[in-house]
Image (cartoon, rainbow over all chains, first blue to last red):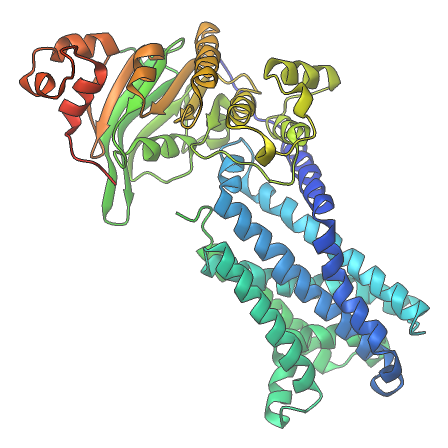
Length: 249
Length: 258
């Protein structure tokens, strides 16, 4: 008797539908992840004439990308792995990449939502308007920025099995990135730290985004930031995928 | 045993975790229309054997053929040919009964319209729990849902890892009937269990596994008859009646395993 394998796109659609249902059920935490950058953007309104619209918008998007990649992705992956949900999916005739592609698609959707939301708040509340090219390039660069933090999340779940430890670690990393990144970039922590911040996942992503909003300011430093970001993605995702275990036993 | 007839053929299987060899060169076959039980104390290698068949762990040597498909060479075909219920089955806690059924029907490529969905819900007596999440179901309801998901694509081989653990007698009996119905349809069942009563009640053949090796394979009653007069069996028997549990303890030892 011959056995037929289900079509991968059928399986992928079923996975996507389920993952979107999970996102819908967890809408409160999704809203909270989007709320942090929105609150920052709103509270920074008086500072925008001094900092610049591109700075404020790029910082807000970067904070949102961190929350999505570090906490949204890695915490749910760690939880589902611990509960054996991945093992149940893996015994089905579906390629394992399809399981992860579905998970990542949800995060990409969140990145899209975040970017559009920041554009809307930036325009309507802060009066920051970009050119059409600025909106389009920033929109796509946000995905590369998101990839940096998703791969960092992958590295964390690759290195750490315990879901509680993953939860705590991602929150600490998120906090450090925000605090050190923000204050370091402004020079509060000294010139040496300010220099390093530019090459950190926070600095590189923020620089890419800020320049994308005003495409005519694109420089060799921005190209370096893009290359550094791609390097981070390859390094974090490479190690994270290699070390990743499908179960916690 | 005719290998060409079998739905599952495990040959010289070994599974290692680092330096620890959990399964040592075991071989067995499961025939169509057969319920085959893997019995053994904790840590004997039952779940490792099942995990190797399911493709969840890499085995160090041996071959596994499911319905004619080598699990290494044709993993997706092999997985499509089997239905699996893991020891601790769980689903995304945010999904309700209907969403779980829709997810797995999609993954297994089984079209599921409203009528089909209602038929399944009626079959597993969950018509009133459609919007309940998996964690909100009782143990029996969870097991019924898990079993129907593992057979949603009508696999020729169904693998159940300790399916009745934690169930009340009514739910357990009901699950046995469902397992026997799978056998009646000509499909095969491979199950692991700690319950000797269960093995005696529903298994056509059993393999007793200990320290990663198969000690013996036979029909439950034949095993009892074969070992009825062994001094070790008589020594562990209670109330003068020899049971499968007596044979099991005599063969695997009295010490409690981790």
